[in-house]
Image (cartoon, rainbow, N blue to C red; front, side, top):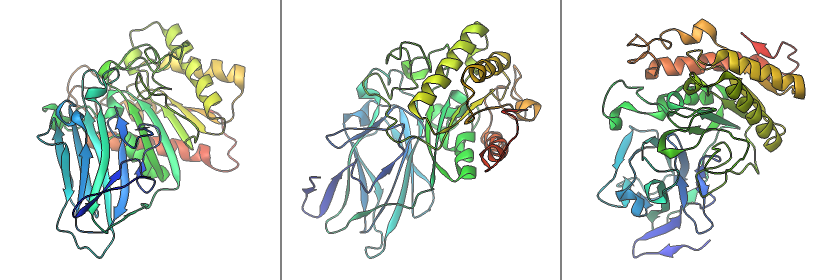
Length: 362
């Protein structure tokens, strides 16, 4: 790995092995950069020295996003893109002789054409630390979780009806609550508006199609240009789609859900796969049928259906403001975190050794 030396600093490619990046929502380029189109994507690393700088490319002036970070578990800081510089100062004036920790995540990413247009993605080229300093591998959770979701998974309006820079926060969602409960690092793949039959934000395609092409199927693509690789599979994979398919043909919703389960199982033979009914119970009958059809054909002991019923849907199946959601659909952060806890409560018995209950959890 080549390192470029400046007068008083050391610049290291973003894909350097000591930097952890969530495995299934970043593209790792052979030239050394990291690229994502997803809210909720994050990196972790430890370093010594007094400073740390994040170096983007020209996407700093074209992407619409908020990047947030915490150093040594301190207060959250953030930078909205577009920004005035491609170099973002993460920390300065730190104690040189101790190891520091960095957690940096994409709070929101709303670029309109990010699936097809590389200029509107987030691209981290490198990081810069003090000359003579070093990067160290971070402390990580032992498990890996991957979540496919929509606007509720992406954290749209978790802070209410505000401007996008303040309203949306993937870090306050049920998916991150789940990751904490399962002691796992999370790869979040969520696009507003997306579903089994519906394309999503950033011009992303629907989550699954039989063709598997990058303009028709998002489950196996990071963007139009890069495949999502499953050389290393997550321990747990959860699909929370269905809300945006409410007005679609239920038979197509069910068929595409079955197709996703089959392809996901082929890609990750040993992962635990969870098909969930949306919190507002949209497309519930179609998703339940999909699970039953899949199990009738595949008899897959490592794939499960989760329904939260009224416990999960309260305040999220309305057409106007409720206590749980400003629009009756997108939960506030506190509610979304509770939903994550409910999901963990359903998942843990299924993960317990020797569990012999039914697949269908209601």
